[in-house]
Length: 388
Image (tube, rainbow, N blue to C red):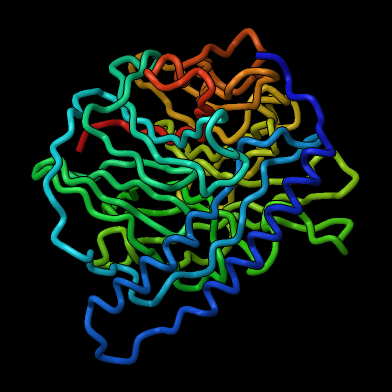
């Protein structure tokens, strides 16, 4: 894959569209009146469905960024205090052919049929693999509207998180639930959730704090520099992945400058390598590497590779995994390709002593390889091991 080239005009046009849609989103959200106490579940469900339509606005990763940017994330307001809204009807059992050792969530959009810079046109898919290199779509999977998904398995349940929402698939019964609203108590706004399970079996979400009415991945127009805060939140008992409480402190902070090398930061991805917790943070088409010995500790950017950048312009919006069988790290990322649809690529590497070059990446999932059209963008990998 060739490096990304700047496209400032495209970026400005996309930014205008994003803000225009954001204003319409806020207006629509304001129009939704919360039901009075004791209102029937059907009323709450109808309102939740209307809000969920707006929550489809998520991180647009498909545009060609300006120098060193990350595709910006739209703010998703904190959800209702009662996020686990019942479905309009009992969910039907839809057994899926999930047999692979590994799972990957991603979003897709056919550039020949839709404006793929608009996250409302993204659809969530699920793929599986036995070796981490060759992937196929899960048989029977029905795509649904959503963007930047992350998948994780706990027991007999798969959880797929997107900004502001979670969907569940029960492997033992074949029942699919959602997507439904989630809340993070103590967060004004949150985007780009990445899930992990702590030592007590609770789901923990890592996310980028978002300020309502703004682009959380960049500095505000009046700011020459700013800090982007990455936090975590722990699942509240009994919520089954629908309600979380913010953990104390920040997991990482990134200083941005409108004229410096780092102008945007987003899309955290958390995983454990057997000795430490590793956190990927995207700087546009680049990926930085951070680490901590405690899950809820303070993460420090690695001194190697150079400037802590595992990828410098060759891939962002990354997902990582440490394979104990081979002692290798598997990193999955995507970057727009000139005149080609975006694909998710994989690099297998021994550690973080050097940056990954173009030669280290190979295509893992593309529209053509998955039986979709060759004009379909495949983006935003979320990796999980398919075991209880």
